[in-house]
Length: 142
Image 1 (cartoon, one colour):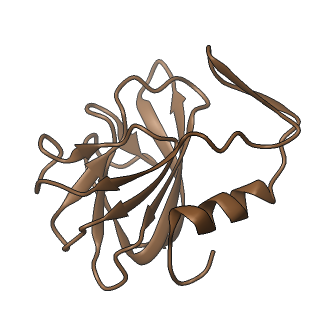
Image 2: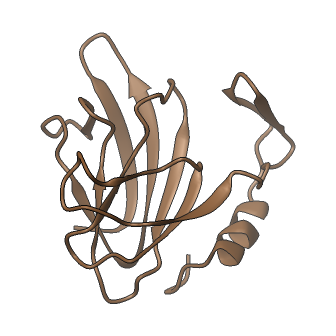
Image 3: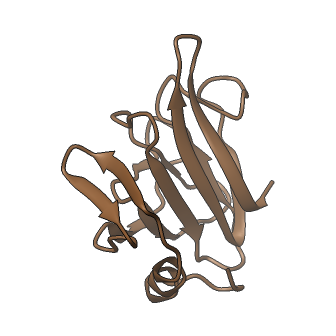
């Protein structure tokens, strides 16, 4: 993705991608392309996992990052759910928290990661009996 994030840019880039058939939840199935109605914006909030803004859209452009404000992934995620989070605050870092009790890439539970200005994270939920884990593929994480 480019150096700046916007919802329209995310839509255009995602529209170029195709999937054959993936069940995302009980109410939506993608076939031969992505459904782009689950894209939104969110204002970062708080300075801890407890008071961070909760992500509700599968593709989210986040504003108001200031190095301490953050967002967190939803607790009600199911295996295979995918979330794309973009920080469109060019000069500020955004804190990204896993859902409560979960972890990123084998890190300690509830530990945040940072998304740099104009960076993005692709988060895939993969629960197992051992841990509730988010697998994160990144661009601009620190």
